[in-house]
Image 1 (cartoon, rainbow, N blue to C red):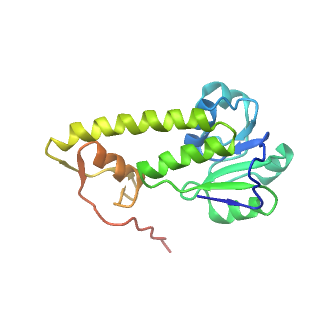
Image 2 (image 1 turned 60 degrees about the vertical axis):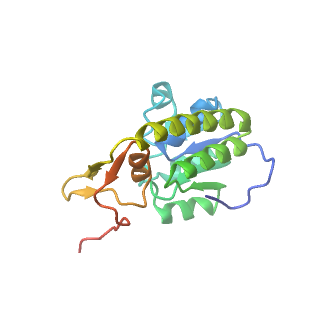
Length: 191
């Protein structure tokens, strides 16, 4: 995770844009209703935000003019969810925090970092501890059972499955599933 442009410790962010649906839900949990000014068209939860917040495009096709109209002081993105070139362009004008979540540990770190960044460290820490405890319980339950060999399809036409270096794979492991495609994710571009 990194912050592009000049983040200053202790800086208060009052105009936030979320470019990631799961981050939008986290910002809602952190009670940032008034600070979040923009979301993507895929940020459908919470529903009242989806109905009332300004949409800045999709996760992969950001509308720069809408972003400029909103004048954010912080944009939160994700390495896999958003397009690198678009995020780099936004970072020329705005503080951009880019998350990179591939494991439960990464998710816990991200929750705590977003909490600190938005002035909600205690509430974020509570959530992180609650999630960690739940997954420890799940791990104890699933570790005593035989692993279920599984393929997790994420797309069709062409068929795509999760690789071993993904968040979904990490979740599968906690739940007692064994990914039958234990290879690193490969993205192939068609010509």
